[in-house]
Length: 286
Image (cartoon, rainbow, N blue to C red):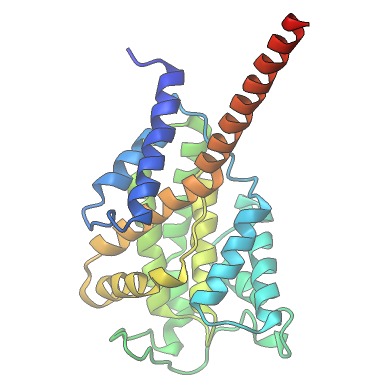
């Protein structure tokens, strides 16, 4: 029988193997067997997981930097607004979070810009997404389309509360896939004139965080994979690649927020033990 301690060591070792394979371009596959196995292990009953309500500064900084780079945003006001949006997302009580919270998040994003009144306003004209082949929602139907997703968000909130309170993560992949599908639907609705991707991914991260799933961000070198997967979902109804993409990203965040910390603490303890033993030997000689 594997002890709890052995299982934790096995989990860390397995995640480090994942990290190595990713760094050496030996990882990605649409069938997502590897990230599924890792997430299943991480959310087993015997693993102490990171408290995702405590998002460390390093992750927030990484999130701001990578989201801004991916969207080619260089204006200081928008970068700072992204930080404000993310911090307010973290602090928003779940009972106050609903479909139309996306408006307040977008308002935060543009709160420091020269025309902050544009934040939180639904677009009033049609937009086109060049190179994607995606047909966005007619602007006249945006409100109704968002309203139609309220029940989806409420169902996800109930699932999130259940998983966090019972530690029963048997439905975690259904939950993740539902969040990702909602993300795709919102991208296709494209509720705002600008800032849709950043706001919608922040909205999705709120749903992740409330379920005890670490928030994710997309690196610049992953932009093409993300866009291709999103277009495949929204244009052809094939969600397999975007589901897999997010499973890999969740594993990335588990490593950044939890596994790396465990390894650092283990190395610190080993160093302390070595120094302590060395000190005892010197005292004996005296």
